[in-house]
Image (cartoon, rainbow over all chains, first blue to last red; front, side, top):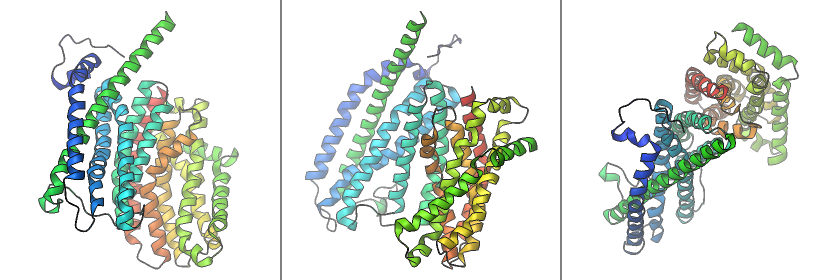
Length: 253
Length: 218
């Protein structure tokens, strides 16, 4: 890790967390709280959703998979967005923690995508009579999944960590543009089965209130879980890099 | 720039390069499809535009491996990077050479292979037009994939994984235009979309490719 901080003035505010030591200290302190909060939200939200909401009059009890499906789909997209922001920060300001955070977020994102795809299939089977349809939303998610796979594969294929961080960041930028393009291309290609958005800022479109509040709690739980996992994994990546640096020093000595 | 283009083209055509291979691959894929889906000519003519587009795309992908790898090994890329020509321009030229040696022959061969797949008569013009508009995008996006993975040993498989998702919009609009043309529907909208993607990609992707290649050459 390069320690090329020759400016005497100490960085302050948000950017000071670009210092790995400070980042580790901070994330260690808030991680336990995050774990506990996300566990509480998930337990409360899921139990509330599964056992204390009525069945939907059309979809019956299958509607309850919404408590896993919607939050995971939301996080799958937001994880990629977070990687995009982290990649930009790495490319512009060269903060190592940022690149490592992007690396750490990718496997979490891919798992969220898988959960969304899987719960969607389980939900789709009784509702649409098929596990899979080439519907725009489903297809874009599959493409997002492929983007995640490519991103992770590129990280693991390159040995030098700085080169890998640079290349994956460029891939993430280009991939984001193409992910959006594909989203609209797929829309053009096939009009689908998927129901409209379950949540939006436009209140008219939202699901009914009975489902809405437990869903919000579940989403909060997923968001907190995502932050906890990413902070934890970023810490691991920082330690791994330190170990590498120490080993390299020993070899040289 | 001209010299670079000439050099790349000569290498592609003379040195047993990807020129013939891409075409042969395209032929093989097209011939294999009826074995896979059966010789029913109605079915074949329905899927012909999509299959031809997919075949052209795969043939293009196949030759990307050679686009930068050989120049990387013998140090030509280092020379290119240190030459007065901007790297972005150099890579655009290489993409152009790739298109002339791979994409253009595919476009010209597609109608012949269309006969094998029983492509409906009105479809030929649209197929050629859509390929003509779409294959440059394939070359330019492929150059980016090649630039990303040029430092990776045996990066061919990795490159496919990276490049194929990027091909999705091009494939959708290209195949859609060919399909609509073949069934007698209006194909202008997907064609315009395809042209838009190609133009955008040509304008922007060389910068991404050059950035990736600079990292790899560092």
